[in-house]
Image (cartoon, rainbow, N blue to C red; front, side, top):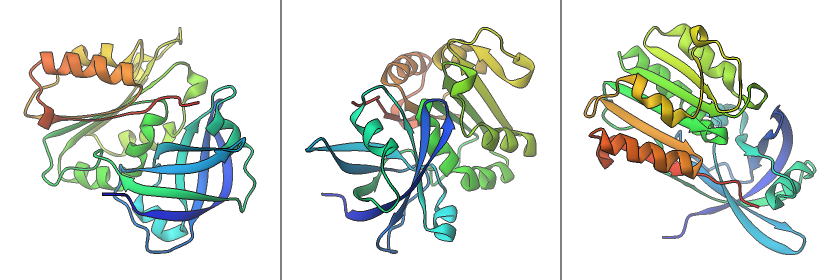
Length: 245
């Protein structure tokens, strides 16, 4: 079944990291709604050709209800069609959106532990979930967010998750830097890829529900390790995102 479509007005682009923009849009119709963790597909024209790209919503449903703005995060790549289009878009430009869709939403029945893994802009759906995560934490669920980036300058939405971990004793926030030489392990920072960090987490099938979002290679490696460790598909949720040109 085809997803519903909506006209969007581009409001602004804000730099949130060296090569990452947050794009804000306002839907033309007020009947649009979504569940935290879902994504949308944006249609756009570049040099006379039509394209479509999918992005997780980085705002919570509550935030959207208050200000009417949809927020997404886009990683910029040299000569990328979406990067060129959106980084040069002017306020008021019209786009078309299809959605929402996606499986990275909170489960109806909460597990003992949630492990939310994201690389690059794959961290966005967990930012959308922040109010739901706070509710789960208040009920005793353990929540661990693991963000994977290359370097410190690539971090974004970092403070949101630091605040979550500071507020709740059953919340943890870790960062894995694949190309950063100096890290502070006392502050939850590690060297290497996120999938190489799993072994130290003492994950337990049947107790932990693991979410994976971002780089396809990370997700494939993570799935292989997790399934080899006894996890089944019901205990794993994933969505792959690539740097599309």
